[in-house]
Image 1 (spheres, rainbow, N blue to C red):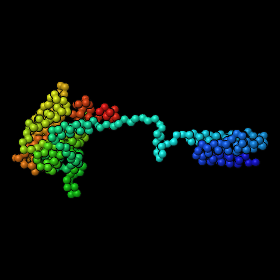
Image 2: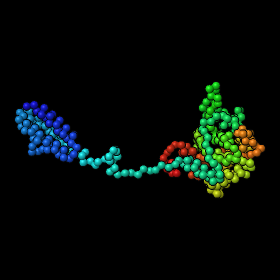
Image 3: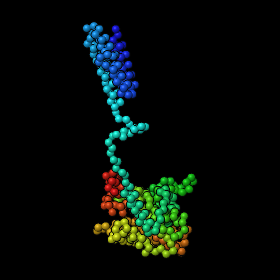
Image 4: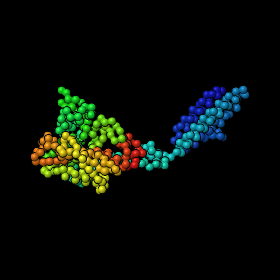
Length: 334
Ligand code: PHE
């Protein structure tokens, strides 16, 4: 008698019968046939065992037990699988598992600030405009009255992407200021205009608590028949009061920009010191002419404000780098 062959045959048949069972009834049938105590294939094997010569009994007996255990384990495993709760049809999602609520995302604090800025300016009658971040020298410098030898055009102080050549008619750079949108707007539209433009600007500055090589500015431009320095001061004062509170003291200091004349720096009082928030001034007649406006007929003011500074001031944020590190513990606070 070849015990081994009967054992192997028994195990194979049993595992197939268990494997194909798709219901409790089929599995029960397999149990009766292959694991039944009173009769069935296991009982048959057991009677074969009785005929084994005494000296082989320990080895064959051990083999019999191994096979019986494997078949029993396969049967128990299958029973668990058949009993397990059904998954929703067509999905891997087990809807019976307990759920955990997902925390909803929020807008980035700078995005929240930008939306609020645009809202305030919209109430003052300023439309929102956009301009490209990759610019040519005409819009970033030339039309803004910044001559070739001006230090602001130093290649080391700008992110140039390409130089002028026979292939590229014009050099390209990442815009270093949103004042480019003043030019683009006046080239496209006739006066009067009253716009703001919010966006990123790029300068290869050393990164520290108050400087980054990429930051956000809000540019403002108002041009019309009788726009004056008083209009500029009023708009900036109203804007600061709307964002920082009615009582916030503001200050205008004489300054210089190639594209405004006269020019000012705009500060607000914080504790015991003044904080510089941006530059402003009356649009230089050369800039108006470069865009096809008649400086004899219209005048205008422009301003450029750093967005992060306002947000940092309102929320007591001490380092501009927090905005760009995507640390959830920081972002979740807004
Ligand atoms: N473009 C200037 C800057 O980036 C700010 C500015 C804008 C000044 C408009 C005057 C008028 O520093």
